[in-house]
Image (tube, rainbow, N blue to C red; front, top):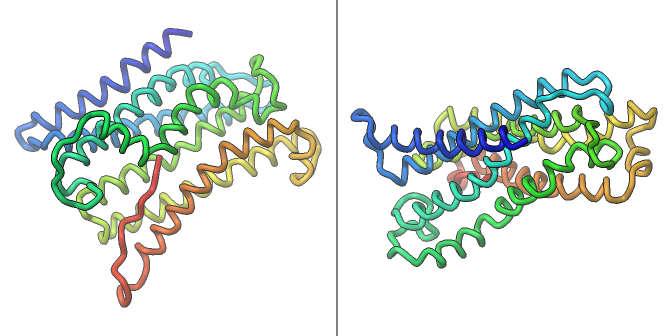
Length: 281
């Protein structure tokens, strides 16, 4: 069990450091540290998302029986990914730190600020990114140990529910589009065709892989149990539906932010100019 976790603890911080140092030291680039940190954090998030989505697809398509079938990758990857969410909390703090210190990288007033104390910056970070930090903490402490059991009869995993866990891993499909959107906003490319195409793909992938994922899981279980979709919540324990609702709630909030940003992005130029869509991973 410890081997995948140790590997994840090496791979994700190592990839971040490699990317940051490369962007800073290559003669053709020579990026400032703030730019290198922010882009490297987005890159690592995208790499993890591709790995998780691939693992999820392999697991979910390999499990013909949605309750009993098992796949070794389900347990191996969830253990491998736990260090990522711990690392990412720190990586997001580094991004917030550099945005706080450097003009033009997301400061609240868009002006240079005197460097604040670490505690003051940390409080600002927790205030701004509270939902994302909470999401990561829940993923590590609750979702990975219990996610498959929450939607597969809500019993302790006991080797069951790999199909559902694979589907949940595929929720990461939208993350690379979110990360690319944030990078384009960072470099003030909001009005380019690339940003608009990426925004449309982000909206579609987030809707399908994060919002509609939960109705699909209920439908899949209902099909297995011979129940209509609307009868599935009544057939499951209360804590099953509560767990699913707690997982779905932040996805709906972030989807609302994406939709609001998309409306601003694609608004005709006759009225107010479009503003960047503020989304979360």
